[in-house]
Length: 63
Image (cartoon, rainbow, N blue to C red; front, top):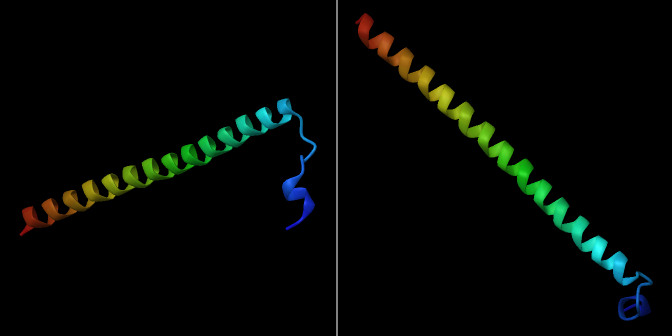
């Protein structure tokens, strides 16, 4: 392994703390994007389901 792996990387304690916070924020952003995508998917699925049920009801009524 390289020496850099075992040595101090030159980042101060404040820098490491800031990195932890930025890393946490990025993970939350990804999770938020995923939640938005899931919500959009479920809304679209429910919309399509209601349209299908309405078509089926109209078709059954016409027979």
